[in-house]
Length: 181
Image (cartoon, rainbow, N blue to C red; front, side, top):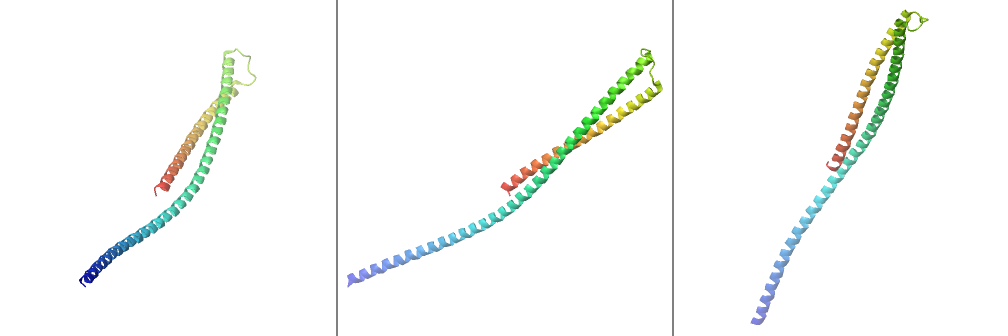
């Protein structure tokens, strides 16, 4: 009987060890289950936050594309305006040169007439003097118009450069915001 009691005690001890091991394992499994649940909740929260950020980024991208289209249109308008101003400036410059040449020819004729090298001019010298004064005034007017047109061209080019800088900054800022919200 002692043998049987010893075996019984041994079996009870083993049973107790198994229960203790099972209890320890159960506590560890419950801890791991809680850790996995916390990780899962964190992952869901991160996914929701990323989804929200992606929506905001998409809205920003769409807004930036619209702004880019507007800036391109503005840039094209500015380029067209600069081209028009250059054409006007060229026309005024050509007109000024033509008037200056005509005035120089008339001055030369007047000098020759005054020196007596030419036969008397059919029109009176007073008319030529008045035309010379008018031509000089027209040359002066054309010079002022050219200067004004040059200033307009400078302003248009400055606006064009500023628009281009804003477009580049917007593109850089937009790229930065898309990658670093």
